[in-house]
Length: 292
Image 1 (spheres, rainbow, N blue to C red):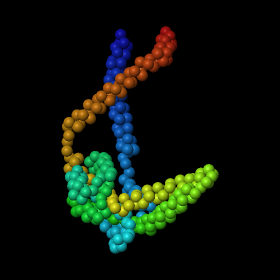
Image 2: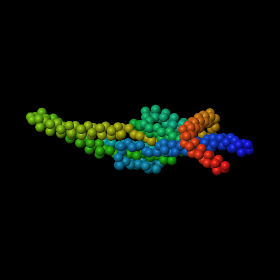
Image 3: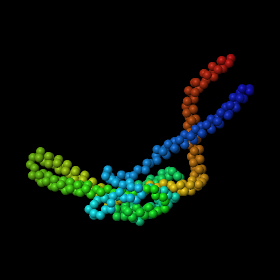
Image 4: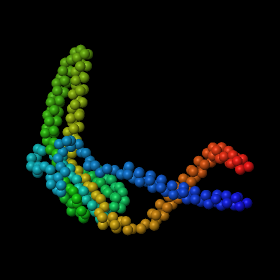
């Protein structure tokens, strides 16, 4: 009777301890998955590529332009800027930047907002007309915050544009010649040969026209990329806020997740119970016979 009582209490104590252990394991696994996912999904801050090529200049520390002032109206210049800053109130600063965009008829081409508290950062890319580029750039730098880096990069693509325009003019002349030859062609072989060359020439013309259109767009508009992080003062203010509703929601989600985890475990135990019984029952029988 005493042995039965001991076994009963062992079983009674084992069940809650097992549940507690499973809950702790669930919390550990959930935290690990969340940490890994946030590390994987966090985007890397990379300056966008605007097709400037390897001739791009820039990266000069704090407001030093990488090329001299542009004086010739025939020059085709691609301009970009990068600003790195920290702000006490990131949301208010972002709103101010967007208000400046509206004032200078600029548009946001890319916006990334990641992390929380001191780990939060925002990447914002702005497209603006070249004539308003430097004005908007300076207005952003007048906003409250600590600016750790800012630079304007310029790329002269005048020679590239001139070369493409020359090639385009020559190809159009060649296209005209092929059309003239095609009209005087008499045999099927001659017609097919001329049509083949004409098609190839038109393909090259379309390719160059596309390149010129892209370059015109890049020289007519400039891009400003702002990298914003949370300042130490702002992160302290943010971290001091206690949000009980958010905590309650997190606790509820954790409880639901644990219930699913527990249900899954019980299903596995039920499915594998024949295997467990096949192993445990012979062991119990052997032990009883050994005692006799």
